[in-house]
Length: 365
Image (cartoon, rainbow, N blue to C red; front, side, top):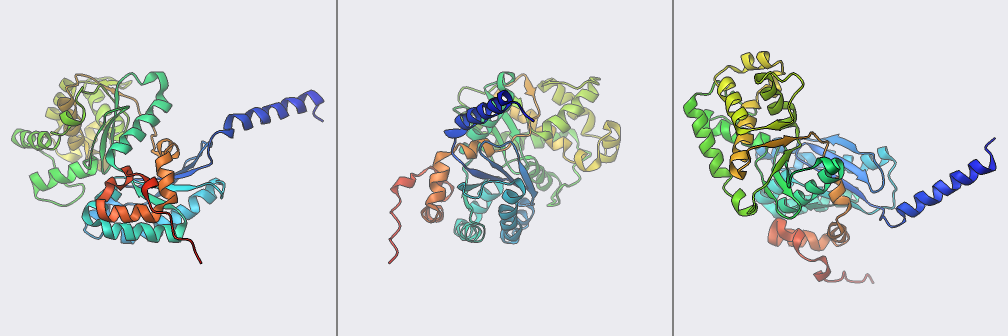
């Protein structure tokens, strides 16, 4: 049987834990990206996931309608799987795919979000790119701590990319898959994803670089002081960096990239067929298909930001810490009908308006 001292020690531990968490609001959040949903609760480490491909139907012109049933199911089921508290306010943050849907038809999207809320109880907001950048930097700083030695992180997703800093960020609907698709259309007149980019001639590489320079012109405006970057996402950590390490005979891998390294890797591999390149690097064909476009994208981002070095630190980064700390977001969740009306009229920027300016709901008689 436990001694009195052990019981008192255990009670003291419980009291300390209660004091440590007493000031933290009980919240549940859903990070809704281009390839699925991740769910978490404040004060708990668990992250629950559901895979849903939002980009494919959008790219095919079908909107998000077919994704609504699995979305509602995930918003209902993930908290139950994680044992999350039922009484916590719930907030969904829709990112790149949801911003794309708002660009196509924000009124239709507002109707979809209303249907999702009515069926699941979760109010979903479309999070602007700038706010997502703030979430990303906050999450990276929490995970890396002293190891984050740069002013910004580079996060390349499937639908969007971010160069996120504490006060200035650049973001665009121009992630790995969307950039690859743009190259496919420009160089191969193909809408296939992924398409067969290789082999690429030197002239085609030059055309790709020029296209990229045009698309990245906004970086200088959004990052006036430049940006020293740490790349945290898998297109770099699992694709670009291993390919560079293979060329430069670094069996233990590398933690830093330079423009010279990227250009040498591109010049060696772009002229090869896809199968020959995949076999030579020892990577799966489905991942190798994106390597050349990823190399071009990272090279272009380094040039546009004036970086001579790119740090590498893979993170399982989500937007959950930022969402859970977002007081404005939870105020909008409590005034969701007003948010949806503003989404219909002013678009994604509705998030930055003030929930306090919404009219109070009429009292029921």
